[in-house]
Image (tube, rainbow, N blue to C red; front, side, top):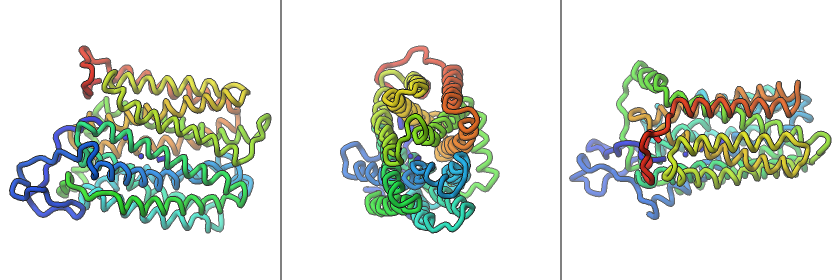
Length: 441
Protein backbone atom coordinates (compact mmCIF):
# COMPACT_ATOMS: atom_id res chain seq x y z
CA UNK A 1 0.00 0.00 0.00
CA UNK A 2 1.84 1.13 -0.68
CA UNK A 3 4.55 5.01 -0.89
CA UNK A 4 5.18 11.22 1.25
CA UNK A 5 8.15 16.66 2.39
CA UNK A 6 9.14 19.83 3.71
CA UNK A 7 12.67 21.02 4.28
CA UNK A 8 14.63 17.92 5.39
CA UNK A 9 17.45 19.96 6.80
CA UNK A 10 20.83 20.79 5.30
CA UNK A 11 21.15 19.67 1.72
CA UNK A 12 23.48 16.81 0.98
CA UNK A 13 26.76 17.68 -0.69
CA UNK A 14 28.24 15.95 -3.69
CA UNK A 15 31.42 14.25 -2.48
CA UNK A 16 34.83 14.94 -3.92
CA UNK A 17 35.70 11.26 -3.78
CA UNK A 18 34.46 8.87 -6.51
CA UNK A 19 30.69 8.88 -6.69
CA UNK A 20 28.40 6.10 -5.54
CA UNK A 21 27.22 3.66 -8.20
CA UNK A 22 23.96 5.50 -8.84
CA UNK A 23 25.35 9.00 -8.53
CA UNK A 24 26.52 11.26 -11.35
CA UNK A 25 29.21 13.94 -11.16
CA UNK A 26 28.32 17.49 -10.23
CA UNK A 27 28.02 20.02 -13.03
CA UNK A 28 31.25 21.69 -11.93
CA UNK A 29 33.76 19.07 -10.83
CA UNK A 30 36.15 21.70 -9.59
CA UNK A 31 33.70 22.84 -6.97
CA UNK A 32 32.06 19.49 -6.29
CA UNK A 33 33.47 19.33 -2.78
CA UNK A 34 32.19 22.77 -1.69
CA UNK A 35 28.96 23.48 -3.60
CA UNK A 36 25.85 21.97 -2.05
CA UNK A 37 23.44 20.10 -4.28
CA UNK A 38 20.28 22.22 -4.23
CA UNK A 39 18.06 19.55 -5.78
CA UNK A 40 15.90 19.51 -8.88
CA UNK A 41 13.41 22.37 -8.99
CA UNK A 42 9.74 21.96 -9.74
CA UNK A 43 9.14 22.17 -13.48
CA UNK A 44 12.52 20.79 -14.48
CA UNK A 45 12.63 17.65 -16.65
CA UNK A 46 14.40 15.67 -13.92
CA UNK A 47 11.78 16.69 -11.33
CA UNK A 48 9.03 15.38 -13.59
CA UNK A 49 10.91 12.13 -14.20
CA UNK A 50 11.43 11.61 -10.47
CA UNK A 51 7.72 11.99 -9.74
CA UNK A 52 6.70 9.86 -12.72
CA UNK A 53 9.27 7.16 -11.93
CA UNK A 54 8.30 6.95 -8.28
CA UNK A 55 4.62 6.95 -9.23
CA UNK A 56 5.22 3.84 -11.32
CA UNK A 57 7.23 2.36 -8.45
CA UNK A 58 4.18 3.01 -6.27
CA UNK A 59 1.96 1.21 -8.76
CA UNK A 60 4.31 -1.79 -8.89
CA UNK A 61 4.64 -1.90 -5.10
CA UNK A 62 1.14 -1.34 -3.86
CA UNK A 63 -0.69 -3.13 -6.64
CA UNK A 64 1.26 -6.28 -5.69
CA UNK A 65 1.21 -5.78 -1.94
CA UNK A 66 -2.59 -5.72 -1.76
CA UNK A 67 -3.31 -7.77 -4.89
CA UNK A 68 -5.52 -10.29 -3.04
CA UNK A 69 -7.56 -7.75 -1.07
CA UNK A 70 -10.25 -7.27 -3.71
CA UNK A 71 -10.79 -11.04 -4.03
CA UNK A 72 -10.55 -12.13 -0.38
CA UNK A 73 -14.12 -13.54 -0.31
CA UNK A 74 -13.41 -15.53 -3.51
CA UNK A 75 -10.06 -16.76 -2.18
CA UNK A 76 -11.60 -17.75 1.17
CA UNK A 77 -14.35 -19.73 -0.59
CA UNK A 78 -11.98 -21.43 -3.05
CA UNK A 79 -9.40 -22.44 -0.46
CA UNK A 80 -12.00 -23.10 2.25
CA UNK A 81 -10.46 -20.78 4.84
CA UNK A 82 -11.97 -18.16 7.16
CA UNK A 83 -12.01 -14.41 6.51
CA UNK A 84 -9.16 -13.84 8.98
CA UNK A 85 -7.12 -16.65 7.41
CA UNK A 86 -7.67 -15.25 3.92
CA UNK A 87 -6.52 -11.86 5.19
CA UNK A 88 -3.17 -13.45 6.07
CA UNK A 89 -2.32 -13.15 2.37
CA UNK A 90 -2.28 -9.40 3.05
CA UNK A 91 -0.87 -9.48 6.57
CA UNK A 92 2.10 -11.74 5.81
CA UNK A 93 3.04 -9.65 2.79
CA UNK A 94 3.04 -6.53 4.94
CA UNK A 95 4.93 -8.36 7.70
CA UNK A 96 7.58 -9.22 5.14
CA UNK A 97 7.77 -5.60 4.11
CA UNK A 98 7.86 -4.38 7.71
CA UNK A 99 10.77 -6.58 8.78
CA UNK A 100 12.87 -5.56 5.78
CA UNK A 101 12.41 -1.79 5.64
CA UNK A 102 15.33 -1.24 8.01
CA UNK A 103 17.75 -3.63 6.26
CA UNK A 104 16.80 -2.06 2.93
CA UNK A 105 17.46 1.45 4.28
CA UNK A 106 20.93 0.47 5.52
CA UNK A 107 21.69 -1.21 2.21
CA UNK A 108 20.54 1.90 0.34
CA UNK A 109 22.86 4.04 2.47
CA UNK A 110 25.76 2.00 1.13
CA UNK A 111 24.91 1.16 -2.49
CA UNK A 112 22.61 4.05 -3.40
CA UNK A 113 18.87 4.66 -3.41
CA UNK A 114 18.26 3.93 -7.09
CA UNK A 115 20.22 0.68 -7.13
CA UNK A 116 18.49 -0.61 -3.97
CA UNK A 117 15.03 0.25 -5.32
CA UNK A 118 15.91 -1.47 -8.59
CA UNK A 119 16.90 -4.68 -6.81
CA UNK A 120 13.77 -4.67 -4.67
CA UNK A 121 11.25 -3.99 -7.40
CA UNK A 122 12.84 -6.54 -9.74
CA UNK A 123 12.78 -9.33 -7.14
CA UNK A 124 9.19 -8.51 -6.16
CA UNK A 125 8.06 -8.66 -9.79
CA UNK A 126 9.48 -12.17 -10.24
CA UNK A 127 7.91 -13.40 -6.98
CA UNK A 128 4.57 -11.82 -7.90
CA UNK A 129 4.48 -13.84 -11.10
CA UNK A 130 4.99 -17.04 -9.04
CA UNK A 131 2.08 -16.34 -6.64
CA UNK A 132 -0.67 -17.66 -8.98
CA UNK A 133 1.24 -20.94 -9.24
CA UNK A 134 1.06 -21.68 -5.49
CA UNK A 135 -0.17 -25.27 -5.06
CA UNK A 136 -1.31 -24.89 -1.44
CA UNK A 137 -2.40 -22.24 1.03
CA UNK A 138 0.85 -22.43 3.07
CA UNK A 139 2.89 -22.03 -0.14
CA UNK A 140 0.76 -19.04 -1.10
CA UNK A 141 1.42 -17.44 2.27
CA UNK A 142 5.16 -18.10 1.96
CA UNK A 143 5.36 -16.52 -1.50
CA UNK A 144 3.34 -13.53 -0.32
CA UNK A 145 5.73 -12.98 2.57
CA UNK A 146 8.79 -13.17 0.30
CA UNK A 147 7.09 -10.76 -2.09
CA UNK A 148 6.54 -8.32 0.76
CA UNK A 149 10.19 -8.61 1.82
CA UNK A 150 11.30 -7.62 -1.68
CA UNK A 151 8.83 -4.75 -1.80
CA UNK A 152 10.35 -3.33 1.39
CA UNK A 153 13.02 -1.79 -0.81
CA UNK A 154 10.61 0.84 -2.20
CA UNK A 155 8.76 2.64 0.62
CA UNK A 156 11.87 2.39 2.82
CA UNK A 157 13.89 4.40 0.34
CA UNK A 158 11.59 6.50 -1.85
CA UNK A 159 11.14 9.39 0.60
CA UNK A 160 14.86 9.56 1.40
CA UNK A 161 15.54 9.65 -2.35
CA UNK A 162 13.02 12.48 -2.80
CA UNK A 163 14.58 14.53 0.00
CA UNK A 164 18.04 14.23 -1.56
CA UNK A 165 17.05 14.89 -5.17
CA UNK A 166 14.26 17.50 -5.00
CA UNK A 167 14.77 21.16 -4.13
CA UNK A 168 13.78 21.79 -0.52
CA UNK A 169 11.21 24.40 -1.58
CA UNK A 170 9.26 21.73 -3.43
CA UNK A 171 9.98 18.68 -1.27
CA UNK A 172 6.61 18.74 0.54
CA UNK A 173 4.70 18.88 -2.74
CA UNK A 174 6.86 16.11 -4.21
CA UNK A 175 6.27 13.92 -1.16
CA UNK A 176 2.52 14.50 -1.41
CA UNK A 177 2.68 13.60 -5.09
CA UNK A 178 4.47 10.35 -4.26
CA UNK A 179 1.83 9.38 -1.70
CA UNK A 180 -0.86 10.24 -4.25
CA UNK A 181 0.91 7.92 -6.70
CA UNK A 182 0.88 5.08 -4.18
CA UNK A 183 -2.89 5.43 -3.83
CA UNK A 184 -3.26 5.08 -7.61
CA UNK A 185 -1.10 1.97 -7.50
CA UNK A 186 -3.19 0.37 -4.81
CA UNK A 187 -6.37 1.33 -6.65
CA UNK A 188 -5.16 -0.04 -10.00
CA UNK A 189 -4.33 -3.43 -8.53
CA UNK A 190 -7.68 -3.79 -6.84
CA UNK A 191 -9.70 -2.64 -9.84
CA UNK A 192 -7.92 -5.17 -12.02
CA UNK A 193 -8.21 -8.01 -9.51
CA UNK A 194 -11.93 -7.70 -8.78
CA UNK A 195 -13.43 -8.25 -12.26
CA UNK A 196 -10.77 -10.77 -13.30
CA UNK A 197 -11.26 -12.71 -10.07
CA UNK A 198 -15.02 -12.88 -10.54
CA UNK A 199 -14.62 -14.23 -14.08
CA UNK A 200 -11.68 -16.61 -13.72
CA UNK A 201 -10.81 -16.90 -10.03
CA UNK A 202 -8.28 -15.43 -7.64
CA UNK A 203 -5.26 -16.98 -9.40
CA UNK A 204 -6.08 -15.20 -12.65
CA UNK A 205 -6.60 -12.02 -10.64
CA UNK A 206 -3.16 -12.34 -9.02
CA UNK A 207 -1.56 -12.97 -12.42
CA UNK A 208 -3.25 -9.93 -13.97
CA UNK A 209 -2.01 -7.69 -11.16
CA UNK A 210 1.51 -9.11 -11.45
CA UNK A 211 1.59 -8.33 -15.18
CA UNK A 212 0.43 -4.78 -14.43
CA UNK A 213 3.17 -4.45 -11.80
CA UNK A 214 5.80 -5.75 -14.24
CA UNK A 215 4.92 -3.05 -16.76
CA UNK A 216 5.04 -0.39 -14.03
CA UNK A 217 8.41 -1.68 -12.78
CA UNK A 218 9.91 -1.40 -16.26
CA UNK A 219 8.63 2.18 -16.58
CA UNK A 220 10.17 3.00 -13.20
CA UNK A 221 13.55 1.66 -14.32
CA UNK A 222 13.39 3.68 -17.54
CA UNK A 223 12.27 6.98 -16.02
CA UNK A 224 13.95 7.36 -12.62
CA UNK A 225 17.01 9.69 -12.88
CA UNK A 226 20.37 8.83 -11.46
CA UNK A 227 21.01 10.25 -8.01
CA UNK A 228 22.97 13.48 -7.59
CA UNK A 229 22.39 14.21 -3.91
CA UNK A 230 23.39 10.81 -2.58
CA UNK A 231 26.51 10.35 -0.48
CA UNK A 232 27.40 6.78 0.45
CA UNK A 233 27.41 6.22 4.20
CA UNK A 234 30.54 4.86 5.81
CA UNK A 235 30.22 1.43 7.38
CA UNK A 236 29.51 2.18 11.03
CA UNK A 237 28.77 -1.36 12.13
CA UNK A 238 25.80 -2.88 13.87
CA UNK A 239 26.32 -0.85 17.03
CA UNK A 240 26.24 2.39 15.09
CA UNK A 241 23.00 1.35 13.43
CA UNK A 242 21.47 0.51 16.81
CA UNK A 243 22.54 3.89 18.22
CA UNK A 244 20.84 5.67 15.35
CA UNK A 245 17.63 3.71 15.78
CA UNK A 246 17.67 4.06 19.56
CA UNK A 247 18.06 7.81 19.22
CA UNK A 248 14.96 7.99 17.06
CA UNK A 249 13.07 5.71 19.43
CA UNK A 250 13.82 8.04 22.36
CA UNK A 251 12.49 11.08 20.51
CA UNK A 252 8.89 11.49 21.76
CA UNK A 253 7.80 13.43 18.69
CA UNK A 254 9.04 10.71 16.34
CA UNK A 255 7.61 8.02 18.61
CA UNK A 256 4.18 9.70 18.42
CA UNK A 257 4.35 9.57 14.62
CA UNK A 258 5.28 5.90 14.70
CA UNK A 259 2.32 5.14 16.97
CA UNK A 260 0.09 7.12 14.61
CA UNK A 261 1.35 5.08 11.66
CA UNK A 262 0.74 1.78 13.48
CA UNK A 263 -2.78 2.59 14.64
CA UNK A 264 -4.13 4.44 11.61
CA UNK A 265 -2.73 2.08 8.99
CA UNK A 266 -3.87 -0.93 10.96
CA UNK A 267 -7.40 0.43 11.18
CA UNK A 268 -7.39 1.45 7.52
CA UNK A 269 -6.40 -2.01 6.27
CA UNK A 270 -8.87 -3.72 8.61
CA UNK A 271 -11.71 -1.64 7.16
CA UNK A 272 -10.81 -2.48 3.56
CA UNK A 273 -10.09 -6.15 4.35
CA UNK A 274 -13.50 -6.86 5.83
CA UNK A 275 -15.86 -4.35 4.27
CA UNK A 276 -15.89 -6.61 1.19
CA UNK A 277 -17.10 -9.52 3.33
CA UNK A 278 -19.84 -7.33 4.76
CA UNK A 279 -21.00 -6.12 1.33
CA UNK A 280 -20.93 -9.63 -0.15
CA UNK A 281 -23.34 -10.84 2.53
CA UNK A 282 -26.91 -9.87 3.42
CA UNK A 283 -28.56 -7.43 2.98
CA UNK A 284 -26.26 -6.16 0.20
CA UNK A 285 -25.15 -9.36 -1.64
CA UNK A 286 -22.86 -7.45 -4.01
CA UNK A 287 -20.78 -9.39 -6.61
CA UNK A 288 -16.97 -9.24 -6.57
CA UNK A 289 -16.79 -6.76 -9.46
CA UNK A 290 -19.09 -4.33 -7.68
CA UNK A 291 -17.16 -4.75 -4.42
CA UNK A 292 -13.89 -3.99 -6.20
CA UNK A 293 -15.36 -0.59 -7.12
CA UNK A 294 -15.30 0.47 -3.47
CA UNK A 295 -11.58 0.91 -3.96
CA UNK A 296 -12.36 3.91 -6.16
CA UNK A 297 -12.54 5.65 -2.80
CA UNK A 298 -8.75 5.65 -3.03
CA UNK A 299 -9.12 8.56 -5.45
CA UNK A 300 -10.12 10.73 -2.52
CA UNK A 301 -6.76 9.80 -0.97
CA UNK A 302 -4.97 10.75 -4.18
CA UNK A 303 -6.47 14.23 -3.89
CA UNK A 304 -6.13 14.64 -0.13
CA UNK A 305 -2.46 13.58 -0.04
CA UNK A 306 -1.51 16.46 -2.34
CA UNK A 307 -4.01 18.88 -0.86
CA UNK A 308 -2.81 18.30 2.68
CA UNK A 309 0.77 19.18 1.70
CA UNK A 310 -0.41 22.62 0.57
CA UNK A 311 -2.54 23.13 3.67
CA UNK A 312 0.49 22.68 5.92
CA UNK A 313 1.83 25.98 4.59
CA UNK A 314 -1.25 27.75 6.00
CA UNK A 315 -2.16 25.78 9.09
CA UNK A 316 0.89 23.70 10.06
CA UNK A 317 1.35 19.96 10.13
CA UNK A 318 -0.26 19.42 13.52
CA UNK A 319 -3.63 20.87 12.56
CA UNK A 320 -3.73 19.09 9.21
CA UNK A 321 -2.83 15.75 10.78
CA UNK A 322 -5.54 16.15 13.42
CA UNK A 323 -8.07 17.18 10.78
CA UNK A 324 -7.22 14.11 8.70
CA UNK A 325 -7.73 11.85 11.72
CA UNK A 326 -11.07 13.53 12.49
CA UNK A 327 -12.21 12.89 8.92
CA UNK A 328 -11.32 9.21 9.30
CA UNK A 329 -13.48 8.93 12.41
CA UNK A 330 -16.40 10.82 10.88
CA UNK A 331 -16.32 8.80 7.67
CA UNK A 332 -16.18 5.48 9.47
CA UNK A 333 -19.16 6.48 11.62
CA UNK A 334 -21.23 6.74 8.43
CA UNK A 335 -20.50 3.09 7.60
CA UNK A 336 -22.46 2.03 10.69
CA UNK A 337 -25.70 2.54 8.76
CA UNK A 338 -27.43 -0.02 6.53
CA UNK A 339 -27.74 2.46 3.66
CA UNK A 340 -25.26 1.66 0.88
CA UNK A 341 -24.94 5.29 -0.39
CA UNK A 342 -24.04 6.48 3.12
CA UNK A 343 -21.56 3.62 3.54
CA UNK A 344 -19.83 4.57 0.29
CA UNK A 345 -19.80 8.26 1.21
CA UNK A 346 -18.32 7.37 4.58
CA UNK A 347 -15.63 5.30 2.89
CA UNK A 348 -14.69 8.27 0.68
CA UNK A 349 -14.34 10.55 3.70
CA UNK A 350 -12.50 7.89 5.72
CA UNK A 351 -10.00 7.23 2.92
CA UNK A 352 -9.34 10.90 2.22
CA UNK A 353 -8.73 11.56 5.90
CA UNK A 354 -6.35 8.63 6.20
CA UNK A 355 -4.12 9.61 3.31
CA UNK A 356 -4.04 13.24 4.45
CA UNK A 357 -2.85 12.16 7.91
CA UNK A 358 -0.45 9.59 6.48
CA UNK A 359 1.23 11.99 4.05
CA UNK A 360 1.79 14.53 6.84
CA UNK A 361 3.09 11.95 9.31
CA UNK A 362 5.44 10.32 6.84
CA UNK A 363 6.89 13.62 5.71
CA UNK A 364 7.19 14.99 9.24
CA UNK A 365 9.65 12.28 10.25
CA UNK A 366 12.31 13.73 7.96
CA UNK A 367 11.85 17.19 9.42
CA UNK A 368 12.09 16.12 13.05
CA UNK A 369 15.02 13.74 12.48
CA UNK A 370 18.08 15.91 11.85
CA UNK A 371 20.33 12.87 11.34
CA UNK A 372 19.67 9.35 10.10
CA UNK A 373 16.63 10.43 8.09
CA UNK A 374 16.50 7.24 6.06
CA UNK A 375 16.39 5.23 9.29
CA UNK A 376 13.73 7.56 10.74
CA UNK A 377 11.60 7.02 7.63
CA UNK A 378 12.21 3.28 7.84
CA UNK A 379 11.02 3.16 11.44
CA UNK A 380 7.87 4.95 10.32
CA UNK A 381 7.38 2.35 7.60
CA UNK A 382 8.10 -0.44 10.08
CA UNK A 383 5.33 0.80 12.39
CA UNK A 384 3.04 1.48 9.43
CA UNK A 385 3.25 -2.02 7.99
CA UNK A 386 3.28 -3.78 11.34
CA UNK A 387 -0.02 -2.02 12.00
CA UNK A 388 -1.27 -3.24 8.64
CA UNK A 389 -0.21 -6.79 9.48
CA UNK A 390 -1.31 -7.07 13.10
CA UNK A 391 -4.43 -4.92 13.28
CA UNK A 392 -5.40 -5.78 9.71
CA UNK A 393 -5.50 -9.46 10.71
CA UNK A 394 -6.87 -9.03 14.25
CA UNK A 395 -9.72 -6.93 12.91
CA UNK A 396 -10.97 -10.12 11.25
CA UNK A 397 -11.34 -11.79 14.63
CA UNK A 398 -13.48 -8.88 15.82
CA UNK A 399 -15.52 -8.92 12.62
CA UNK A 400 -16.11 -12.69 12.68
CA UNK A 401 -17.12 -12.68 16.35
CA UNK A 402 -19.00 -9.40 16.79
CA UNK A 403 -19.76 -8.02 13.33
CA UNK A 404 -19.10 -4.82 11.43
CA UNK A 405 -20.32 -2.41 14.11
CA UNK A 406 -17.77 -3.71 16.61
CA UNK A 407 -14.95 -3.51 14.06
CA UNK A 408 -15.87 0.05 13.02
CA UNK A 409 -16.09 1.22 16.65
CA UNK A 410 -12.70 -0.38 17.33
CA UNK A 411 -11.08 1.53 14.46
CA UNK A 412 -12.81 4.74 15.58
CA UNK A 413 -11.22 4.18 18.99
CA UNK A 414 -7.79 3.81 17.35
CA UNK A 415 -8.31 7.11 15.53
CA UNK A 416 -9.34 8.93 18.70
CA UNK A 417 -6.31 7.53 20.54
CA UNK A 418 -4.05 8.78 17.75
CA UNK A 419 -5.59 12.25 17.87
CA UNK A 420 -5.02 12.54 21.62
CA UNK A 421 -1.39 11.43 21.32
CA UNK A 422 -0.77 13.87 18.47
CA UNK A 423 -2.36 16.78 20.33
CA UNK A 424 -0.35 16.13 23.49
CA UNK A 425 3.07 15.28 22.05
CA UNK A 426 2.98 17.90 19.28
CA UNK A 427 1.76 21.06 21.04
CA UNK A 428 0.55 23.96 18.92
CA UNK A 429 3.35 26.46 18.12
CA UNK A 430 3.24 29.60 20.20
CA UNK A 431 3.60 32.00 17.27
CA UNK A 432 2.97 30.19 13.99
CA UNK A 433 4.08 32.05 10.89
CA UNK A 434 1.67 31.67 8.00
CA UNK A 435 3.17 30.39 4.81
CA UNK A 436 6.27 28.96 6.45
CA UNK A 437 6.43 25.24 7.20
CA UNK A 438 8.08 24.68 10.56
CA UNK A 439 9.03 21.48 12.24
CA UNK A 440 7.18 22.55 15.35
CA UNK A 441 3.98 23.17 13.48
